[in-house]
Length: 89
Image 1 (cartoon, one colour):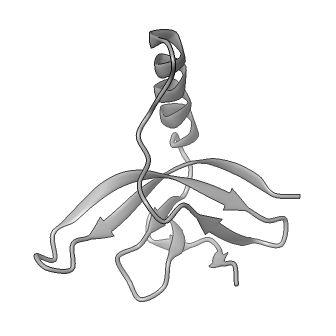
Image 2 (cartoon, rainbow, N blue to C red; image 1 turned 90 degrees about the horizontal axis):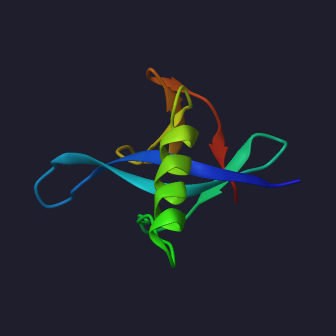
């Protein structure tokens, strides 16, 4: 069964080598594999309340959770520098 959550993603600009953070959707498999949305996402809603709930979900999902490190050769889930999983595929 696949589950998903929002994940903070550390990225590096290839031209400037500057690092920054974005939010993506992370899809987790029971066997430890994972996949994620290629592009960063933004909170959205058809009402201000839906937008606020989306922002709250993004914050909640990223509290004490591994983040997605996209700064190396391979994407990895990391918690304080530890590798936590491997990409699907």
